[in-house]
Image 1 (cartoon, one colour):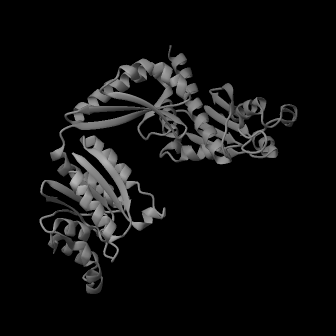
Image 2 (cartoon, rainbow, N blue to C red; image 1 turned 45 degrees about the vertical axis):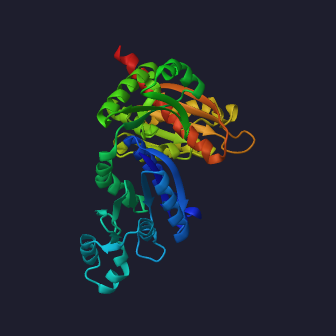
Image 3 (cartoon, helix red, strand yellow; image 1 turned 90 degrees about the vertical axis):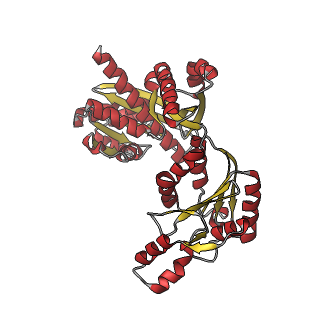
Length: 410
């Protein structure tokens, strides 16, 4: 099935609002085995939207619109579609009853919003449980137009809970993609380890790419149904995990901090951070994960030399002799965390986020009094460096824990 997605709204063209709906729907169409031939953004302009829908119907089997279903004059999506198909707009009684209840029988408010209850005749109407604008799908001469609301918080639940089941009737193939997230390994190193698997994989296919400071392997399978596709993907993921081992830290949207939390929980390990260059960012990432309070015992931001000395107990002579940005200071920061606070795991950071030596960073890592340091030379603006240091420190600690636990087991 050929699909065109039309995002409606002048705010999208002006850059005031990001069109995340089209990306989401493209993924969902791919899962159904539908081919998205075109994606376009159209402002709140009747003539342009009319032309886009009219042309789209000639070239595609399904047109999906998002936005333009509200009560105001610039909400023109349904009228454009009706005019393209030569259909009348009719009142949907169920939508009207919901609207009356929503506005508590306030007649002025009801009449001001009644446009949201009008749909093309013969349309299938989907109730919006998260807003007032219901949506619909209309079929005409073998072609279909699906109207979805603009706000993602409304659009996604309607699609997942109601629309997808209807579209699945027209699916002949199912295409599913899942990802493995890889830490620490560079792109070249990762590719070399799995190059033969990538080259020999046709269905599922395996494709490497880089996204937000992590390496990703995307596995895509095509099958007659979702369950079969997922089984194919699971088999390929197992093969890749066996090759990459502990460097695989998660799947799909799982973050490195979520993966670290799982390790801390599995082995009942406490953790502490003492951060200079990262300024609490590592702790902040961990705190994003629900349940981490059972394991994150303390976090210090020791940005100045005085803080490192007074709060943590780093020796002044260590800083004077080696410099505050040094392997020795990073090591001693971890050492003091173990001595003073008795935690199982520790992370320290010290480095330059700007200036002549920007990107020079030392990370201290500790697991049960085993300490190691890591020197990084990173590039980019200040906060990008800080974020990369935070992610790398968490990834390295996770690997350190797993390697030591593995040795303790045998």
